[in-house]
Length: 564
Image (cartoon, rainbow, N blue to C red; front, side):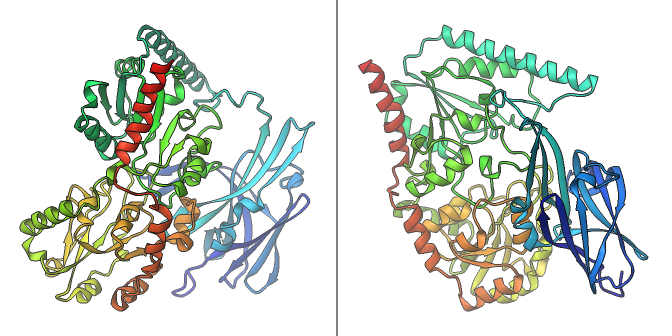
């Protein structure tokens, strides 16, 4: 440490001149420093899988640097001779700065990180059969800094890219055994499906509603199912269900066989999220797979919109490529989800979101408000602010939220006798609920256990969120939305977004807590963005999405079959 100041080294510029790579590093450190490249192996994390507690260093060597001004250094290297006339080997490399006070990881400045893709280079050789790929990326540390990575990989031309690789190429005996086991399991799954799908004739009468992420009927699937029964179509079609939490979990061979046996019987299959089993199976042409998706459009990159980043789908064989139809909220969202799923725009049906059917029904709203205030009489006559951000972390096990971003004392003082601040955290953040001091609990209330956030919109006056898609539905209320994003740049650069939050959010974006409080105090909501968002995304909204989906897919499909 330098007094009370933290020593920081940041990569602020990347330049190429043919095969010469130049990196400019700025620091607030005034002493002597030298730099080292380290090749990273396995990263060790804590039990939650979130915090980094160590990592294996596979290789390391010192690199030359020039001090070009006070606190500014430049590292320039010939990629063909980075280490004793050798290229950098396959892997991720970080830059370490060694000083008298210790060693420091070099971070990426946000300005550079936003342009990583532009700095990537592909060097082909061997008649185009091989390539050396140099790219740049970052890893967020403690929700504060971005580690700077140089990724170098020697690639070989893949003439069989359409043949999906379900697991990584195996080099060890254990890995090869696992790969053989997986390959055998997939072959058996496909054979099992093909046999039973030919046993059961396809007459257009069997409908399956399924989810591999939820073990209950909910959301868009629930509204479609209810409407099918209300219209008496369950007498015309045989409706089946399959709901389980399989994604990320180990399921038995019997469980998979049971699921595939059910899939083999179907003419129509409605799913609401990622369902990896359809990446393994090639469904019969007569069977139609329909993705209804579970959320409105948000900011987080998903599917092929984050292609090339960690966890992206394969170029071929992804379940996203198997959809015959995809329901979206409006025509304007077709292009967005065409990018996400990597399929043609003609496959999308802009019928609306079934779970929003009846959302603006005046009687429904009136009845709910009456019941809500009977249950919570202390809230009647108050203006309700609903704070509902998404989680941070890689998934359910590591999900968390940094409550230090909230100053509960200032929120309490702002509320006075006019407002109530309801905190509705993402369901994944259950292990770490917000701690509200007793003296604040009459104005700040934890509503995490409230079952349906959509119902709360009927009594909410101001929604505060971040990267969640919950603003999509709430915008229909045409009420103020504030986006509190204290980690916006870190989130965009580490997690990835397919749309700029600052440019596309239907409401004021506040990057600091003070900005958020000023917006609340001054009623500076930029409400015109909400009105514009509704016009652009709900131009065809009429509250009958379920009927449109049923008519377009089930009934028209049934008529086409009868004509044949």
